[in-house]
Image (cartoon, rainbow, N blue to C red; front, side, top):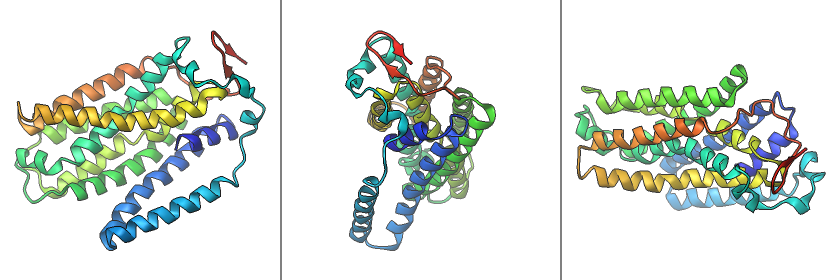
Length: 288
């Protein structure tokens, strides 16, 4: 995803960059939805083989894609991934990672542990993790598109993500405090929460736009991976808390921390909408 976002960002006009990256990420999220649906229709081994074959075809297609003109003319000798850790860049890098942790809080806790959560809320009907993840993934796909369009309309990456975070946390409060809900309503809530935290494309685009051409791909590739890794800490903390307090309270506590940290981190990055990306990072300064 990060490499694709970088390539699209460097190839399209800066005013249309967000639309291109939105399409890329939305198609990627549709893959999750397709995998969930296919997994219910065929044997899991068959599904794995289908995924492997498609991965190999994608690898072959990658060889036919050329580098962006911006990257091709860059001074490759200056490409040093350790530049991320110098000159104040590490703060921006970590902030980009922290902004994304609510995404995997929702998938790793709200959706995956939906049966335990809803049992503690007295929900009528049976809620399964598989269905919660499926409806949440539909929401994430739609959210990717909506967040991308919103960032174009607002002409701001930060405001689009900020609004998504506020809306997402509001729905988490509804999820954890509402009583008398049915299983259908929980699935609708999962879809809506997924929609609000579906700012994946905007996040990776903003992360790529924060840095120069010589380390842009490194950042755009590693930020999503560290965001995914944050689920381990969130789930571990949730597993500890649910033995001390109720399951809904544990989920709300972890969610409050995740969304709060993300909003704080959002204040530490630069607005990058429409930024000219034709520059490189140097050891001390940014070179045009």
